[in-house]
Image (tube, rainbow, N blue to C red; front, side, top):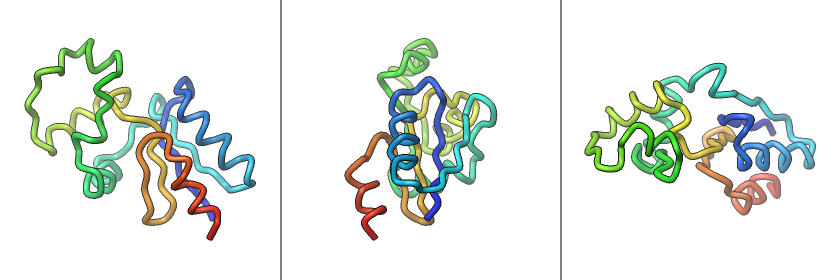
Length: 115
């Protein structure tokens, strides 16, 4: 089993995900979104399952600073905005093969490791 985690090092939930998989000796490929933004194709994979607007962290400081509280954007425009501004994403985005999670989803991760 190998998981891919998209997030930033300063995010508590991202560190929580890294620690969760490390404690279980599961190989993790970490993508720091401050160094390399997630590709549009990768974000589309998450958006197909959860919806693009559900990937947006509406409680983040970046969301408020950019004045997006009243924005009415299509899914495609949200995806473009998320590639430009990775701090708008709910973190972490975790991928295990075709299984995906957004945010700290420890119960789902436990199901993955139980298999």
